[in-house]
Image 1 (cartoon, rainbow, N blue to C red):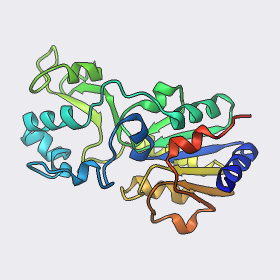
Image 2 (image 1 turned 90 degrees about the horizontal axis):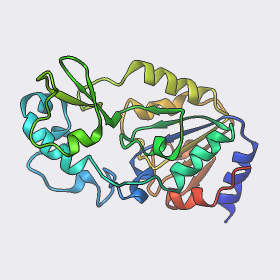
Image 3 (image 1 turned 60 degrees about the vertical axis):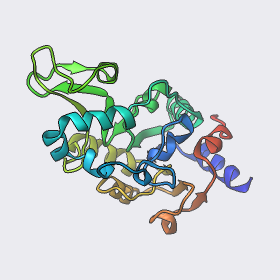
Image 4 (image 1 turned 135 degrees about the horizontal axis):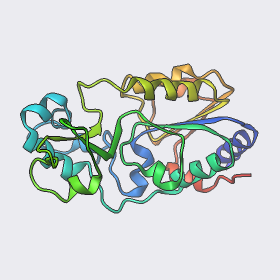
Length: 240
């Protein structure tokens, strides 16, 4: 396939690759995305998902927030797919500037990537809002009702909810990774979530590749478009 051969050539020739990814990276690991036909935002709930996952709902309807969060945001047993694994392999080979992800599932780290910039946080980190003690994902998943710290404080997932700002330090590090790269691969994202999607504007390198099943607002800026499943594409890439 000509597109895969071109992608392989550009990866071979790159010295600093940045990957910017979204929910579509993890769908082949069994984690549903948000905006596709079968995604979270097309399912029927008492409230819209954006309401459940908002800061104000967390504060005012904490019990209902956690009912939704446990049911729809935690996926026990999800494993890295070929995309996660290949990116980790590329990093080990010294070719990655970093992985910038909108996902909160931790699968890039599970695959072995170290330079991961989690724009929206992680389900694997949870903290007491009173004493800041940390708790893992299993503590939330296996509990019932509103999770409480040993000190009695309310535990909050370390994820960026609607109405909350992104972490400035993470944004700066992600921007630096994209700005310093010579190849930017954008995968599994509709580029509809801001300000995260705006980070790709900082790319000053040679080639932009977009791997996404559906069109994105950045397609016209891409040097290469591939519509095949992202794990299927990465499974064909060789790390040299």
